[in-house]
Length: 316
Ligand code: UDP
Ligand code: MG
View 1: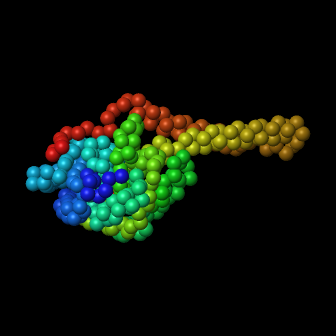
View 2 (view 1 turned 90 degrees about the vertical axis):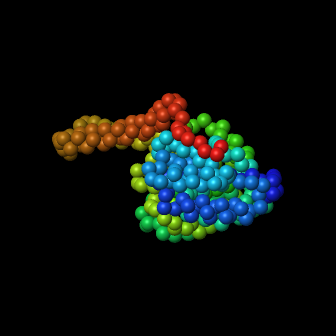
View 3 (view 1 turned 180 degrees about the vertical axis):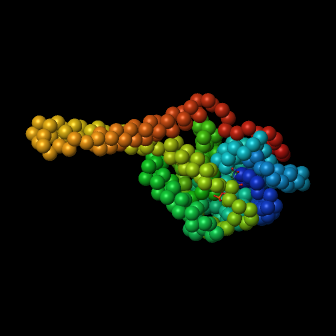
């Protein structure tokens, strides 16, 4: 483990339409990093296909400040690919993944690094004790998400963590060796293992602008994390299949015994038939749907397309 004065630190900042906040972010992170006493640092901004002035503003910083590096995507690929690109390209002995909107206060970076040094931690993950200025909908969905994923997934995810974390060289290298294209960063880092230590903090309100995670992106994120980290949905389908067969058999036995022994009690109706058809039809569709989800992901992976396309690299 390198002492602080020998550490080169990378900060990874995915940025999508953040023109209203990016300047403050740059200033606050730079101040923190200058006061840190490390060997050096780099700020890697990943411009994830912003449609506003974000890239132009970033280029302004990069012209004056060689520590600012920009990786600009050809379009919006999403938060997770942006972080993944940052990890792949960073030069640091350690890297800190943070948001561009100052929800993860840069003033906590030194503490994170201290925990890394003091506890020999390969990963320091930030756990939100309190979240300011989030809608009840966001809080509720986040809560539901973590409970569900943890009850289904093979890898345990610390509750109330985002992607705000420090990772060291070993973890960076391990991460780079992962072949999947659709990356669920926090799950993968948790999966990589080594020594992972929490740091508790209060999550700030977004400094300016609005969330870049609408419901559709949240759903895609939840489905990736579930399908890539759990085979349980497949098993649920299997169990349901078994149960339906049992119900079907039971029904058949009931009907046959009814015909043989209680012919006068049997109601000659369509209802039971129709209900059975609908029910089993539903079960089958559901099962096929689950298979389809996995198949779709396999399809995505074997296409072997890159996770993102870089249009421009500045200061690298
Ligand atoms: N982001 C990104 N691409 C996207 C959506 C978001 O790079 O398609 C970035 C965004 O600029 C921010 C971070 O990911 O730095 C987290 O997004 P946001 O703050 O909007 O999410 P929230 O904090 O509301 O969950
Ligand atoms: Mg945010």
